[in-house]
Image (cartoon, rainbow, N blue to C red):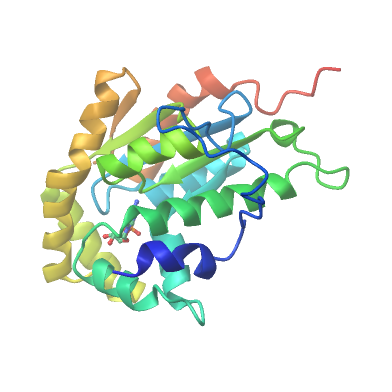
Length: 251
Ligand code: AMP
């Protein structure tokens, strides 16, 4: 698969222009520093089965807490549709089969999107206290869906703060997705793809939730009730953490 060789050329965004002749090769034991410092950049992962309400709830949280919402699925669909993308066909196949797209693609797309959002950041015409001086806060939805992504992102992009995990029974998820499929136009909102997505979620993504659970980083929310009720439950959790989000800057 040519994905590793072509990735840096084809994914738009940051290019590593470092002159390699000027820097000594790092030793294999040398720990890599993440691109973003978690003291400045807050990353909250939003996980849950397909149809659990990750996107709906993330969108509701954006306004209130000044987050930027990045959906891994949306970034992949945009990359798939981007003219000239060498990964379009591969992404389409993985999405249709309900499989996890190779991490090199997904992690790079997220890193690029974070970099772009941070460079927009705070300005006089758009004052955003939480985005001042290189600071920022992201809701990263639908990511990480596999252990390799989780480890790579935490080690190389930014150490995540915690995980919002939306739990909901499969029967409810199936009904929601079939209903959504009537209007979404998504290639994977059909019964065959949905069942594959459930399987991938249980086998590949739940271990990620369990991994973060062992680190005490998972906040579990029952997302069976209607969105307004789920939002209330999430707000209670978030208020404790981000109550100062809209407070005026000190100094
Ligand atoms: P979603 O929009 O979150 O429902 O995701 C739709 C599809 O995009 C998934 O079934 C995967 O094929 C792909 N996808 C979404 N998020 C990821 C991810 N973090 N890593 C790899 N593939 C993903």
